[in-house]
Length: 289
Image (cartoon, rainbow, N blue to C red):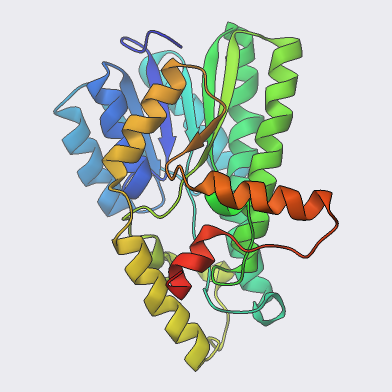
């Protein structure tokens, strides 16, 4: 997509963080923007502010519900005729500092439903629309944690993000064979200064664990360290600029931390040599490495 002006972008998780920054960037590029988010109050503010730059509309959407994502496509068509650029961006981190077996069933369901199934619903809903028009671009937000592994973020997050990378790679192969005019990218950001660590406050009731698990000294220490790493991460608007350029240049893997390549290479060497799993940069950052 070399030309963005006059086209329509759809962004989930658009009321804050990377999603909001992408909505701003697409509006600045002359696109109409459809913003979707589960947080109605923040969404209304975002739509009002993006509308000051260009055409924008918002719809409250829970990406874990297929019918709501399908409704997002219908809303987009009603407002702006079609979608050209679709950003499956909504995500949550899950409880940090817990071992895989310590996560509750609700923890696993919440993170996988948002981070993986939210993307799956976006793919199943919007890809046929893009294919019908023969052009367009989809961006799936994964993480550098989708290319590495570790223990500081929840195992559910790592698992979901790895799956998003694999799903995006499968999409790439399918588009190459089926519709060369439709492209896909996978966004694998490092630490970004967002409010993702506050997502627990917006966990839907059906994913709540009752009674709530008791935090441990270890989980509290990891949480505090993660707050520091994320707070010192890249500003979201810089990530949005990187994504913009990647779309223009038809790049598939989108990184925000150039040093992630070292971690990816180390992981691949361990796989090739049948060694032990390596940890990613997020673990090193939290440990002060």
